Length: 315
Image (cartoon, rainbow, N blue to C red; front, side, top):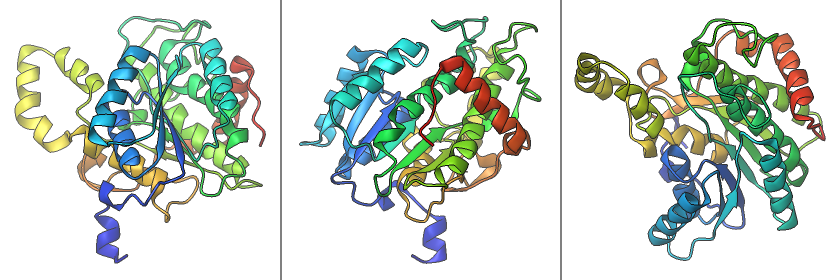
């Protein structure tokens, strides 16, 4: 592939996925659905791991209509409940699946009030990070010996916001709640988890861990945050910001798809749009903020995550 073609990567460059199984969390809508659609078109068996199985069934119907003959499975998974995470991992194990791709995509954004998961964790941290940490650890044994297997964890441009992450109070019990910071820190944790996991995988496994973010994708979460603006703010956003910084969900899926499928991708990389402020454009390897690259902070987060979830990794 020429350098120019490499820099202009699109979903059309996803290689054949026949015989491969991809588990995608939050795949019933948004960039998760678009990721599932492309992988199904390329021949993958796609598992839609979703909290609302009725909506998952609707997504399955849409995928089947778009890709006749596609192999699609719906798996119940509520990332805000460790019991549900364990049940989903057990169900996937009982199905005897060889997992080639685990795409940790699902997440929540900007809960206005402090809310907690079924296990008492702050909702963003518990769902976006701890749920995926536990799911990955519970499924990893089914991936370690699979050639070309990958774990792709979806972060956000927002991981740079919110100031330093307080690893002594990840559940917001001793300080005033800040929804922007809570979301940002959960997304920073996604990147830190990827870097720490890759160091462990590099010791013995065929599997690699990669992070990605969709840029300014036009998803339900981004539309809800726009709706919270003032009338003038919404008008300015629609007229000035949206054309410059927002791209469609299918293009928002490109960095995830590249991280999941491009043979040139290396473990520990982070992919995002290559355009202005990483908001839109063709995906490329990008950098994350300073705290996310701090190995001591990554190690501390790993220890905290193990303690809170009770999940130990086989690497």
